[in-house]
Structure formats: C-alpha cells, structure tokens
Length: 86
Image (tube, rainbow, N blue to C red; front, side, top):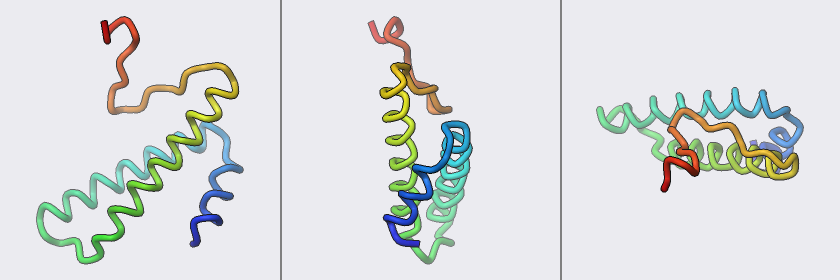
C-alpha cells in the first residue's frame, strides 16, 4: 500500500479505531524488536515502516485532539501530567 493510500485510510477512522490501530502497531513493533534481538528478522525495513505508522497514528490523534480542544489520551508508554513534570 502506498503512503497516500495508508494516510487516506487512517484519516477516515474514528479516534477509537485509531487507538486500536496504535495498539496493534505497538504490539507489532515489539514483536519485530524481539525478532531483531534473536536475529530472526530478515526484512529490517519492516521495523522502520511500523515506526512511521505509529508516528502517523499518533499525529492524527494529536491533531484531532487539538481540533477538539482536548488533550490526547495517554498511551501505554506513560505520559506524565503537568503536575508530575514540576
């Protein structure tokens, strides 16, 4: 699938669907990292593609949250609140 096709497919999804897509991509990234660690991954460009897909989904979620005037929901990597940063 070309980049523009994947971008168009993502823009048509709801925030809940994007969150599900993000979780799936993060799991795929984890699996690929394990394959790299055990030297089983033959197509190393797949890791880059998944990383960029994660970035696309996070960007869309952030843009939609900014348009709605809310903060995006924190993903499982643990975003800290403003109070915790001080």
